[in-house]
Image (cartoon, rainbow, N blue to C red; front, side, top):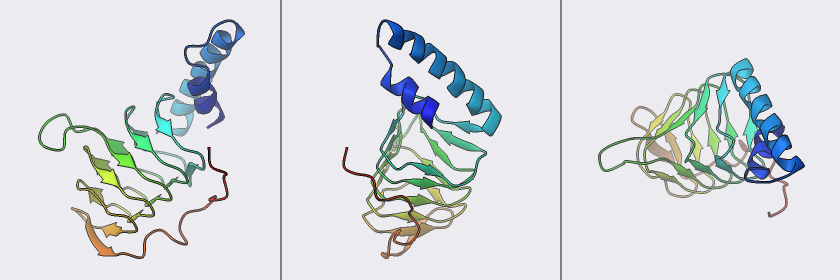
Length: 156
């Protein structure tokens, strides 16, 4: 995360910061292959982003991830290139995404949602929804309380 954040902050900078940006992009790419986590450095990610386990995580460049989002291994947050859901997901704050879950298309995931393991989400989720299955269906409105860690970051 350090190299991802440094590459994002120094993008477009000049002077020594440009050198820092190049080094950060190189290290980010190195760790992307080493750990099997593909998150482009210019993806919008809020503070408190947490990856529970390494491996198999793919996030689209244009996706937006809110504050305090917990992602497990094998998660894909991807783009759909045609149809009514053409685009990328936008995730709110305090979201938990279980292992192997797939979020596709121009969907909005509300604040405080929990998405179960191996769920395939292709529709919007209201705040505090719990979605499971293929295709994902809402089974509860208890949300992600108790699942999301590291929520003590100040507002940025």
